[in-house]
Image 1: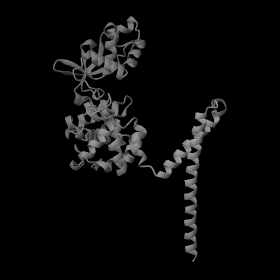
Image 2 (image 1 turned 45 degrees about the vertical axis):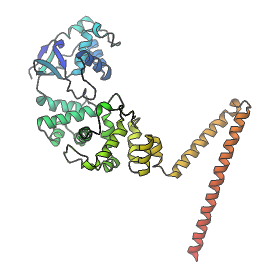
Image 3 (image 1 turned 90 degrees about the vertical axis):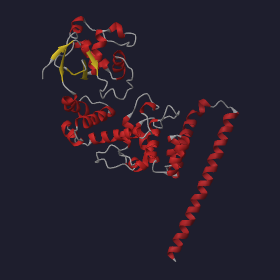
Image 4 (image 1 turned 120 degrees about the horizontal axis):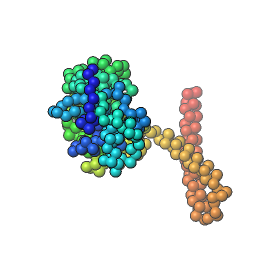
Length: 367
């Protein structure tokens, strides 16, 4: 490994970096990439380390020379931290938390170690470090990286898994999830730039398609199949529904029905197994309303009664100090009593009707 030193201001960011692919980089300048890496990808923590100890010369950046440009293919956050520390005045309006650095530490940034490699030469090291190692990327970055290695270097998924020490089929699952998304884009039923959120949460669909109910709804091909189009052509309409429910559409003013991955991805999966629930989700675009249709009525009743019981206990606790003798609150309580009596009366009727049926059944069996 032939390590050289270079002025960091002669280095450029890698716009193909897997960590950056989930952000919209169109027309972004190098300075805007600095700010993105600082704010969204925690380059600040690296800047703090450099400010405390100077730059560690035993940690060279990996650089690709392309078209006369030095592109950093490993170490983009470090490069952002260095550029901010070297150009405090330039970035101080956008970045308010730049750490102070003493001159001797700052001097270590004037010339930093790098070594040159092609993307093909570096993929094994980067894959081990960022897919399975100590400096893991997000799931979308990992998936894009795996796809790039497979498609650009002709390396199959089994070989990629072996090279980075993957023993849990993670490589294959990530690639499969990416193929589902890219098939949606190719079929014109999904546009990543049109999603409801400011960031593409790939982990939602990656997690979803590992669940049986999603796989059945989409009729997905086996995970073991190294295919670019895992969803059969006649099921693209269902793929459109899934991607739209998970990610929404700004253009159509449709919000994602997923507020948080847990439990919403699981609950959406339950809805996919129930035609009534699917219909409700299409009509109201409300996960809570649709999910209730998947829950047995006995469970809903029990849940409602438990909530009512707890709320009445709270009301009783506040009665002494909270009731001022108003007629309005008294009448409200009377309405609650009538509702409770009506519920009890109906449940009592059904209870004894069931008992009568059981006695008749027992009598028939004894004849």
